[in-house]
Length: 244
Ligand SMILES: C[S@@+](CC[C@H](N)C(=O)[O-])C[C@H]1O[C@@H](n2cnc3c(N)ncnc32)[C@H](O)[C@@H]1O
Image (cartoon, rainbow, N blue to C red; front, side):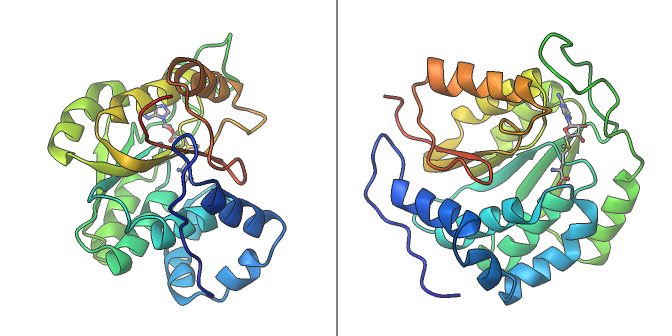
């Protein structure tokens, strides 16, 4: 991989240069080809790709943030809201095991599918993603010794607040839970734990089946907190900065 540097200049809390480098590099440039030859990216992908519904570019962007956008921040862990069969959480844990020893990934899900959804806002319905797989995922974590990945089973609304009290600081929150209530909650519960400059990556708002996720982002991040996106492709990325 060539040098890929995080520019310090910020505008409204974002590093637009970094957002452009990652986003346009993946959409129009040479980054996909280069990353397909990256040893660590490939190693983590091999472990995770059968267990994730994340498209390749989104996985690549998480990798770019972890590799080039993480070290400049104060210490903090990673949270993921919406784990399903575990692929994106495994991927981030495998990358951090090599690049950021001491960083843990806390992965929240019912592991029994979607809770009740709001039919006015969400296209997803209760029990979507209800596949068996939790025990298999635990087995894989043990077999591959992914000791920095912790599964937190249950509704976010019942598990996250207490877990985050022990986690402390967060540098990256990957929000991949599709529905209005869950996206909204996952952002709010993480706010006071996020380090300055920390990343919220929203997987779903630009997906045609997740308008409820978009509404949560519009309402909480844009209207209420006055945040502006750093990146819109392949997913929405926001940074923590005092709201404008
Ligand atoms: C799209 S899947 C996650 C995909 C996963 N990140 C991957 O790599 O394939 C969304 C997940 O969000 C979970 N979810 C949504 N709302 C939740 C809530 N309130 N509490 C716990 N889990 C929730 C569902 O159970 C589902 O497994």
